[in-house]
Length: 143
Image (cartoon, rainbow, N blue to C red; front, side, top):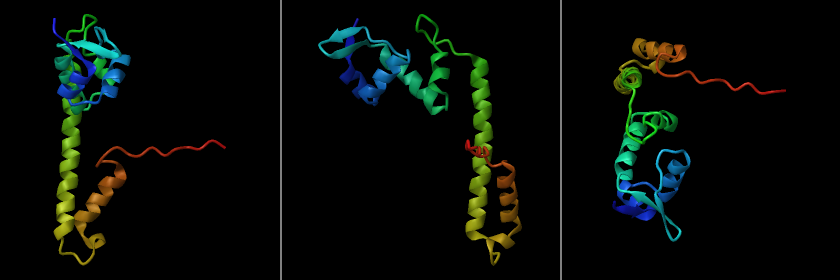
């Protein structure tokens, strides 16, 4: 079995060695030994890192991604979790599209003031209601 040291894995995967050490600490990847001070990984780690990168790009947390691997290290992805994430992305896309369209309108709106523009007023109302994204949580300070 071909082994790659941490420097080579970092180069091929396009992530810093510190990320690889963190992923190993979280149980997402596992080294197979050492060569001097350098961790060694099996060649399969590159595919696993690609799956991790894909999960991160889709917005999954590292804990979610960890659950996508069975105890033997093989991918075992819950299809319902994928569907739920796709639904979440659809909601985000709709919100971002509405925001984009509103910004484009505001940029060319002929109204003398944005506050006089009915479209801009609807966008303000949507933002106030939380319809354009998650509402910020206000931090309650202890006395």
